[in-house]
Length: 395
Image (cartoon, rainbow, N blue to C red; front, top):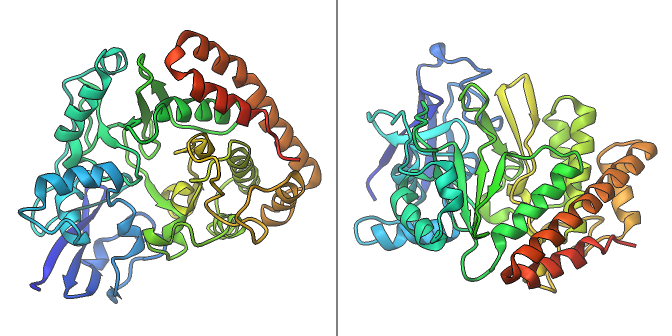
């Protein structure tokens, strides 16, 4: 095949080029002298250097933004006749100007787009009566502006009237889809539980219909500056297909090796995050659902909790995404405490306090779940299942 060349950007700076030649991928930093090695690197695993990076698969940090699931299927239906959607570099050329994190992609010589806009305000979005029709409309409009991974139907979106100097929206819109009814409600209450446990979450809103979740992007700071974001999957040098091929102990080791600041808080939050996922029976807490943020390489911190759902609500025999203590099965309280002590490096009193905080957070959310169930009878079965799971702390 002919060589495909993309310019690679970090923020608004063109830092290098990505080449695909047959089955070889090459990334080369350009104009090294003008690059800040603390700010202009494409990944912690790919520091600024004169020598090129050459791999047989697309570099894992670049795979991170490739669309999956419903978003990928939308692009395939619309563009498969004119381009090879299964080619990762061609897919990056299509959506890479609009990504999560600071790294973006354009055709060689092409400029970045620098604004995002919408025809709807956040309030209109949350109160719109025909949510499914609206989401389909937005998916069709915004699919090529949404470099965001995950199998759940989602697109990047920006509030009407709030133009911002970035090529993608300030929010991620998520829909339930037909396969997992009530998924937006599921994630909404799981995120509320995380918040009640003292964990950091993005800003999030549930539409009045319960069919759409609006989640604020955590890779954008209060001044609308994009932060670097890296998934643990890429930090472990694994492709997106390897997101289930690891352990929670390895996640903890990756976070501690990075390292994140303040280290004590990062260890506690990681433990509480894994603990909450195990209590909620989140079988999708894989390597792509843990990550770090940074503005410069000397200051890195754990990303907020995201993509948190109870999968057992839909798949009663589901198992954890990664192993813990060498097993892919829901762990008991002793195994979870050992994870906090040995993998996360916490003291016994810190482990006990984290467990108490997570339990208290779940207790706090259950009345809110019950109230929602009373007011939205169409979600009663989902809420009852979720409530039952919240009551089932591991022995």
